[in-house]
Length: 89
Image 1 (cartoon, rainbow, N blue to C red):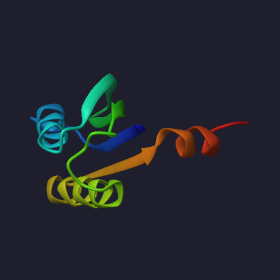
Image 2 (spheres, helix red, strand yellow; image 1 turned 90 degrees about the vertical axis):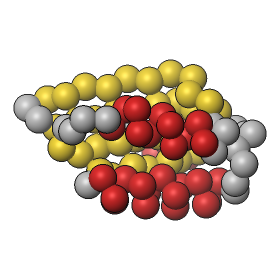
Image 3 (tube, rainbow, N blue to C red; image 1 turned 45 degrees about the vertical axis):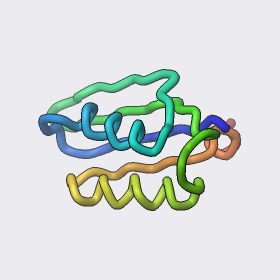
């Protein structure tokens, strides 16, 4: 199952490394990644494969949100089909 991970917050050292390490610890594979920093604000979108994750999807979303909160970031994990449906014009 593919999912979209979004990360938003003030730029700081180690965001990409921390998020990628956390996803890897849950056996989530990163398929594609895009990130940018604009006037000190960090944004990142990732397409991930979460079908082999070692925890349920709901728990994955909670764990990533909690990790983001610890770092002062907003991290959301959404199923790709839900993300796509929400962003269609």
